[in-house]
Length: 168
Image 1 (cartoon, one colour):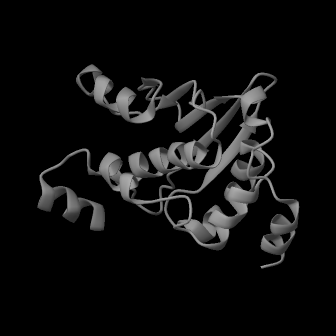
Image 2 (cartoon, rainbow, N blue to C red; image 1 turned 180 degrees about the vertical axis):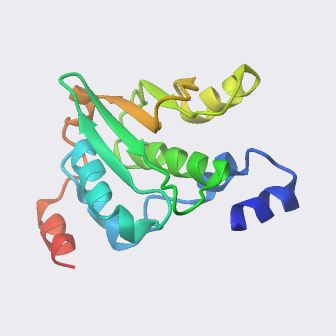
Image 3 (cartoon, helix red, strand yellow; image 1 turned 135 degrees about the horizontal axis):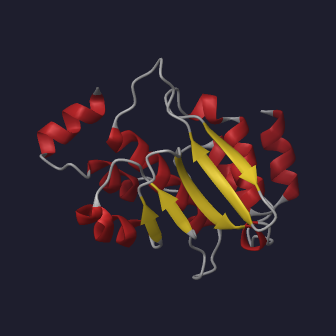
C-alpha cells in the first residue's frame, strides 16, 4: 500500500502521526466547510460519519452516544486491508479537526484506543493525541469525547452554510 511504501521510504513507523500535521481543516473542501460551520463537534462528527464513504474507502467511522460521552469509532473492514499508519492518521486527523474548529484550548479527547501498541509507544501517542492512549485489542479504534463538550456551540457555527453543504 501507499502507507507501507511511505513507511519504508521514510523509515518512520509513526508516519501516520506525522502526515496529519500537514492536513488542515480546509483540506477536504466542502466537507471541511461543513465541519467549520457545524453547530457543535457532535454535529461535525455525525455529518462526517454520514459522508465517511466519500472521504475514505478504507476506514469508515461511526458515532456512538452515551449519556456522558461521544465515541467516534473507526472500523477497518476485512475486505480492504488497512495499515496501522492509515488508522493512526485517521484518528489523529479527527482530533486535529476538533482542535481547528473549536477554539477551546481544553478541547481534547478523554481517551483514544489504538490496538496493537505497547507501552513503549504510549508517551509518543499521548503527546500526539493530547490524552490517555490505551491499546484494547478487543475494541475497535476509537476516540472518546466528553458529551457536554461535544454538544457545546462552536464559535464558527453557520446554519446557512450547513444548508448549502447539505444540498451539495
